[in-house]
Length: 91
Image 1: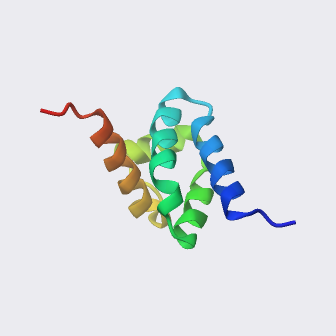
Image 2: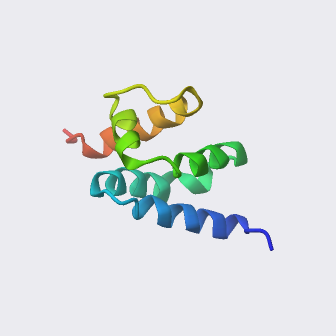
Protein backbone atom coordinates (compact mmCIF):
# COMPACT_ATOMS: atom_id res chain seq x y z
CA UNK A 1 0.00 0.00 0.00
CA UNK A 2 1.40 3.39 -0.94
CA UNK A 3 1.72 6.28 1.46
CA UNK A 4 -0.97 8.95 1.28
CA UNK A 5 0.07 12.59 0.93
CA UNK A 6 -1.21 13.28 4.45
CA UNK A 7 0.73 10.34 5.92
CA UNK A 8 3.85 11.39 4.07
CA UNK A 9 3.71 14.93 5.46
CA UNK A 10 3.07 13.57 8.95
CA UNK A 11 6.03 11.17 8.70
CA UNK A 12 8.32 13.91 7.39
CA UNK A 13 7.24 16.31 10.14
CA UNK A 14 7.92 13.67 12.78
CA UNK A 15 11.35 12.97 11.30
CA UNK A 16 12.07 16.71 11.21
CA UNK A 17 11.33 17.07 14.93
CA UNK A 18 13.18 13.92 16.00
CA UNK A 19 16.54 14.23 14.30
CA UNK A 20 19.04 13.21 16.92
CA UNK A 21 20.48 16.63 17.68
CA UNK A 22 18.50 19.37 19.36
CA UNK A 23 19.89 21.99 16.98
CA UNK A 24 18.48 20.27 13.92
CA UNK A 25 15.21 19.53 15.72
CA UNK A 26 14.83 23.27 16.31
CA UNK A 27 15.67 24.12 12.70
CA UNK A 28 13.83 21.45 10.72
CA UNK A 29 10.85 20.98 13.07
CA UNK A 30 9.43 24.49 12.75
CA UNK A 31 10.30 24.61 9.05
CA UNK A 32 8.38 21.40 8.44
CA UNK A 33 5.38 22.63 10.42
CA UNK A 34 5.24 25.87 8.49
CA UNK A 35 6.22 24.84 4.98
CA UNK A 36 5.82 21.15 4.11
CA UNK A 37 2.11 21.27 3.34
CA UNK A 38 2.78 24.00 0.75
CA UNK A 39 5.62 22.27 -1.09
CA UNK A 40 5.09 20.68 -4.49
CA UNK A 41 5.85 16.98 -5.09
CA UNK A 42 9.44 17.45 -6.40
CA UNK A 43 10.28 19.67 -3.42
CA UNK A 44 8.82 17.12 -1.02
CA UNK A 45 10.91 14.41 -2.69
CA UNK A 46 14.02 16.53 -2.20
CA UNK A 47 13.16 17.29 1.44
CA UNK A 48 12.61 13.57 2.04
CA UNK A 49 16.12 12.91 0.67
CA UNK A 50 17.52 15.68 2.85
CA UNK A 51 16.06 13.98 5.92
CA UNK A 52 18.30 10.99 5.22
CA UNK A 53 21.45 13.11 5.67
CA UNK A 54 23.39 13.13 8.95
CA UNK A 55 22.81 16.04 11.32
CA UNK A 56 26.59 16.55 11.55
CA UNK A 57 26.52 17.35 7.83
CA UNK A 58 23.19 19.18 7.77
CA UNK A 59 23.95 21.76 10.44
CA UNK A 60 26.99 23.30 8.69
CA UNK A 61 25.11 23.27 5.39
CA UNK A 62 22.05 25.04 6.80
CA UNK A 63 24.11 27.49 8.84
CA UNK A 64 26.24 28.36 5.82
CA UNK A 65 29.48 27.24 7.50
CA UNK A 66 30.01 24.78 4.63
CA UNK A 67 28.48 24.55 1.19
CA UNK A 68 25.93 21.78 0.82
CA UNK A 69 25.56 19.41 -2.11
CA UNK A 70 24.35 21.15 -5.26
CA UNK A 71 21.06 19.25 -5.33
CA UNK A 72 20.11 20.72 -1.92
CA UNK A 73 21.46 24.25 -2.20
CA UNK A 74 18.16 26.07 -2.85
CA UNK A 75 16.33 24.06 -0.20
CA UNK A 76 19.13 24.56 2.32
CA UNK A 77 19.06 28.32 1.64
CA UNK A 78 15.29 28.38 2.20
CA UNK A 79 15.59 26.44 5.47
CA UNK A 80 18.46 28.65 6.65
CA UNK A 81 16.57 31.86 5.87
CA UNK A 82 13.49 30.52 7.66
CA UNK A 83 15.54 29.61 10.75
CA UNK A 84 17.35 32.94 10.85
CA UNK A 85 14.09 34.87 10.51
CA UNK A 86 12.64 32.96 13.46
CA UNK A 87 15.59 33.83 15.66
CA UNK A 88 16.16 37.43 14.64
CA UNK A 89 14.73 39.88 17.18
CA UNK A 90 11.86 41.91 15.80
CA UNK A 91 12.14 45.67 16.32
